[in-house]
Length: 199
Image 1 (cartoon, rainbow, N blue to C red):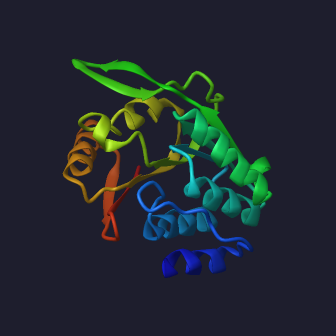
Image 2: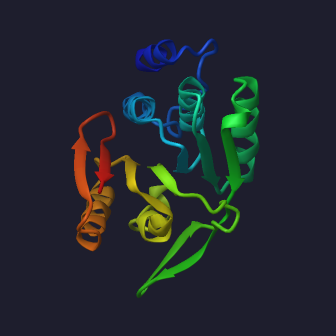
């Protein structure tokens, strides 16, 4: 847990981050996305799945004095939980947790369960953080994020994929890169692996 503590110190959190062992993003991933956010000051951040990452990214926006997080969350209880945590950290103005239930989605010949994005505002995405839906739902569970959100991405948009050490994530990144030859991928070896894709 010491890495979470160093992250709290670096970002000036006065309270301990609420972390759950299996659901929270690992500290290495949170460090990667917070470093990028503080350096590049994205105006619009969209994340697939809410939680500790929502607090970290919102704190970065507060420190940058620019930026807003839109967090797609399929669990109503997690919408409430993350919203309450943002309140307690005084970060609510930097993040909208959007209830986005999983729904049937057909992409080509394949069917997925993926977020309903009808409540996502018409924004141009500078930074996309993908940490859901859970991998156990289906094969390549997180694949739809790029085809579904690519038209909303700014030219310089950077994409961050958590849990990238898993075979499933390695395969879907290969698909993304094949389908989007203007993207380049960089793998970062940390606790669970992270992929960064940029144009």
